[in-house]
Length: 497
Ligand code: FAD
Image (cartoon, rainbow, N blue to C red; front, top):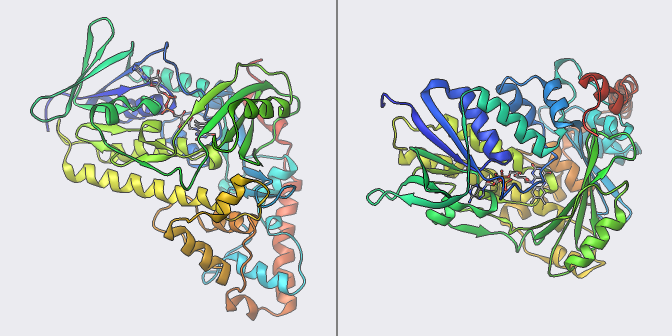
């Protein structure tokens, strides 16, 4: 241990930079100094508005009052994602948060539902999921004991500004300026300082690279290496525009497939986020922009934000005294809203593995890299599933996706589910069994068999079980207020214009 505080420098002030600075400043107090360098002239990526439930816990860890946060970020609640045209044009399914039905310790609910199907019970699998039915009904409320699992749809620029106020209130220092050069220590090869335009330097012990796709520190200075996953997730372009709301916000994000990728719609309190994601091998930018602008509803409020990306992960996300958080660590397209979550995981992991003394321990670095890599690989597989398991053959893009080789870890999962209805959550992976079941069945993988324990129920027992669970969900949804009215009431009044 050293006597002086650890000097932590966060390079970049997008969602990743401010999520990092806020958490470090609040958690570490006088144990560390936190300095964040950002350049207004360079700006942020300007997207990233749909989240998943762990963000609720992250905000709580930071002691954030939810209604204040929602007011400040114009947030709405999110209960899942509607996938339209993924299995086949005109067909849709829902990947919702929360569980479906009730699992038996020996077998997940899907086995009982599949048995029911074979006995003539035709109600869709989703009818047994509270979050899914509430989302489709456009309803929401906080329920006792966290019975409704939710996330947020938020304005990312406002979220960063909100976290900035929090971080600065906790003693973090913001430095405005462009990082022109990264200075390495001649002996250790560690980062010694950031040199900014105007002959300024920022020294530190630990550097967090939040410079986005530029990855100035982790790649530019330390050459961590990048694993390209484009052969599995071929989309590499996006355009985003914001539009005025034309109807009350729904508590879910829409992901609408087209012949060379997909489009998103994310409803906030004051406006809607829209975007198109595509593979440049199959669609050119002008066509993509036309397609986006001709499909949005409401007045377009912003210039198109054009983004190029390469799907993949930095091979080492912590090198020497530099940790990559956010887009600098890698990026997979936003299909399941996982990027902000990866930021959160990296920040919490960094806090757990914070160096004892000024120098990070190689064992801690290895641990961080292994855990972060495992997260990314698991999410990668889940995303690939949406492209691989499709009945679409109507365009070269979809024919490519349906025919591509996928990682063995994924093909094993798809095969096991198709044969037996079984799926297992590995280690602490983000997506639990119910997510896999919803997406696999939604994409058209129907199991050929199910667990024998489900068949031990007599027909009348099965009827009672299924009808009871379905009624429970329907009654609860019936008693919920409309989502938009609930948000208005919860936040006091709508913000923004
Ligand atoms: P950025 O926002 O790019 O921030 C980089 C920062 O570094 C900026 O402050 C910039 O000024 C600074 N910087 C860079 N170079 C320098 C320099 N030389 N000197 C000083 N400062 C510098 N995630 C989700 O969870 N949900 C979504 O719905 C979602 N949608 C997305 C859609 C698209 C099309 C894309 C591309 C991403 C999406 N993401 C989403 C990811 C999400 O946007 C990012 O994870 C998140 O915004 C974090 O970005 P960042 O802070 O790492 O990078």
